[in-house]
Length: 300
Image 1 (cartoon, rainbow, N blue to C red):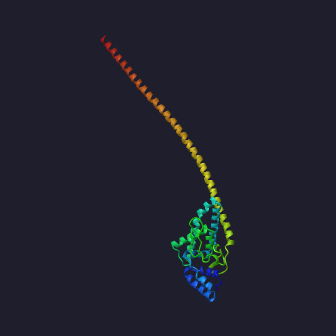
Image 2: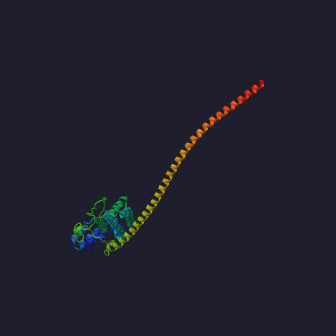
């Protein structure tokens, strides 16, 4: 027997989409049988969740540990944004898309096991909802109710609009004031005792921060190693550049010497040609003298 609206929500938003309307009708009938017309009307007004909202609700209820890991990561990223920790933001920013894709794929896998395949459009709505969860605490709280009626979205700045995104909002949920963050507890499978995620949250958050801090320290160590390598190679480059400059200076000096030797060689060659011509002229003069002497001796 359903005694209050919250219990009806926990049961109703745990069923697959095809079962929502029949189960809602059953709960309305139970409330009427108990003579609670107001409760019957409230249950009848509960909205059927979209397929994306149901898939996220089902995953939150059945796989709280995996959702908690994403939640712990979201808190680290928000803390880095608040403190403007550039190193953490670089590490976490690169990991955000991977986290969203991984959890979205798991949600699609779990939904398929329940006979509900998620098309591309629905899968994108799931990713948008997870992105909103990471970006905004109110969006996170809404998702963790396990009673979303529609997907969330985040524009990239500002807060996420969470108006009318959960089955119970404001004072409809156990007397809360309008605008107050939804309950962070869900009932697994629509019944049983409430699962409080707060205790596991602290442990997983600490473990996640330790893991990310280790990754950050490793990245910093690799950066220092890369800096040292750059410094060594820069020194080597300067050494090689200086060596090239020295070789260029020596080459210029060698070329100057070559030019001088070439000039001297050309001058020596010119002088040799001149001396060769003088030697030939002297030889010709001697030959002519000898002929004259020979001719003079024959005449006597």
